[in-house]
Image (cartoon, rainbow, N blue to C red; front, side, top):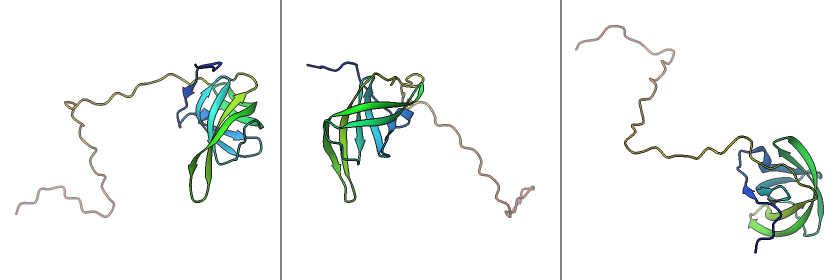
Length: 135
């Protein structure tokens, strides 16, 4: 049974919403978001029940929102860092829709020729012949 308040969406890595920042300076990579919460990855140790102030860049601009860590777990281990994934529950709704609209990626068909490339630029110092040389 799904008990979420709002539908969530996957956040693209090129969106401004994908990067959030804790008020204490820690960086968050937002993986999924909804108006009432987000799933974020970070190297900060976030324990369930902890309250945070999060700077989020959404379509209307930068927003400071209070959030509670609903759950957290270790998602990846590296030699120099431990990466956590944390579900953040916002105290108030924020705008998380994508800026613009979705453009599906359509692959090129095999019968479409790739075209011709641009000619190579002339490098200064090269000898350029204006007449044809016959051997």
